[in-house]
View: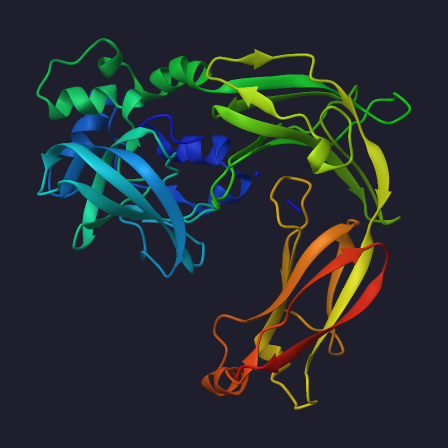
Length: 391
């Protein structure tokens, strides 16, 4: 179980570390740190040998996740395995550098630490990119790509206009001035079912997203206080569910809740957050549930021995928020893939071929179709997953 977008091209590392999804800490950007003002940063990203070969304005018409890799992002370091990428359809409106026109595809990472830039469908952007094929380009959150309405310093530099007072601000001071205006805050108190304070709970928000993309998340980095109070800052505008939880590993128990104090995602109240919002009094109560151990064994339908060491098991509830249990298990113990602290609920389970499996194992397993099934977790269980012939 497990949590903005870069406000501007300024201090992208700082923003990445503090206001993106929790998993995005692995992305690190380099290059513009010596730029003191917003104008300096705009010049660094837009001019010189290091600058992107293509710079253009465009609106995002649709997005989808595809299999494959966009490679190591330029001017960035990512520790996330590249197995998927985001294909973003962009209608080009204005070009500042390079030959770009019409409708193009911009590739970027899907998020979660791979330095992917988090586009929103229907919004307009200033895009810094490299070529990646016919009418295809690649970008990431370290190139200078920005939401158009937040790219004032860069646009004025590219258009040859004089800088404004904001453009000449220290980058950190600019960040402190505009972050509260472009993001929201949620504060409240979380308590136990009997009304006592729910202290040291992980309190988070998860975006409700229509597309099959990683949702934005944010949380109180200090957990809930001794009296149950919490504040979540730097929330990018959008629709969110608010959650709280903690685990008692010694007794296999979990305290959890969705705002306004319900146990099911379907009953949660969706909270609309706008830039500059300071939502207070978001109080709710948590309840106690048991968590379980579920083990899986993989076998062939006809009993043929399988290279099970090259396989893994993935369990997923079909939705994503901070209370959802997602796990890919690759380690076996006595032939079983065991997952602990699984909350009760309905899950989708499937087997998969592990990355880096030997050529021999891949050949053997190519004869079999991966197992997929649904299951309800109501207690400890041992489940057999059966592979059937591919043809």
